[in-house]
Length: 319
Ligand code: ADP
Ligand code: MG
Image (tube, rainbow, N blue to C red; front, side, top):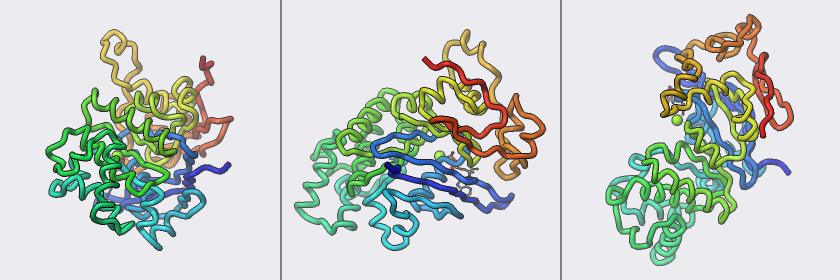
């Protein structure tokens, strides 16, 4: 069976005063039916740009995105609302993504009004149902965002994203702005919803513990490219790309004795404005050779894994 979401050769640049940022440099990946795929990488590597171009909130320079075989670029041009019935996005910050002047009823009901022309009693009933689905009460539809807690606000954002019954949710750091105790509750909710509604998730996060809890597969992104992908237990248990190794080593560890055993931190990423000719990780890579400085390795599959490296780490036994 083919995947639900297929992304091929996605590129996007941003012109700026200081030069051109190559935010996406040919990104390929898939998300299966009812699958959660995590997208990880340092800040600025292009994760949100990938989300925005998938959603067609920003037009990619090139590449194709299909969902269940339908071309999303074409769909967005023809009928923006039809796109919303197929996929939807939840942003990191429910403070800024929810209109503070609107009651929850309007925030969650707005897509139902515009896409289905719902109003009055049927609209109210559907909003109540959506709120209950995310663990809120129908009574809360009368409230404004500022009257709710951070976790409740993110639940409202999720309810809104589910209004048109999409097949895929793009979750861009959905719990990063929440307290740790609330994060787990929202992640639980997302897992429940996935089961109940047969959803697929593309989960963007910089928190590798979130990946372990939520995702079956992970995509590791570095300066606009996927450099490693595969099942989470394989990629985290035995990374092949030196960048993935560094990313795992850079997880903050509270115990100072353990921290002392860690490898030195990665250091600054090269500017996305002046990328080196070869592998963009070469300037920071302990294994880089002359070849890496002149030639950019392609992402090549090895079993269920794929990595883009001329000098991959040894495969370790993953229990
Ligand atoms: P991430 O979500 O992984 O932190 P982004 O996709 O937000 O990364 O950004 C990727 C690169 O593109 C960064 O160098 C960022 O500064 C740049 N960028 C993102 N959005 C814009 C924009 N609207 N205009 C110009 N540059 C942008
Ligand atoms: Mg981002």
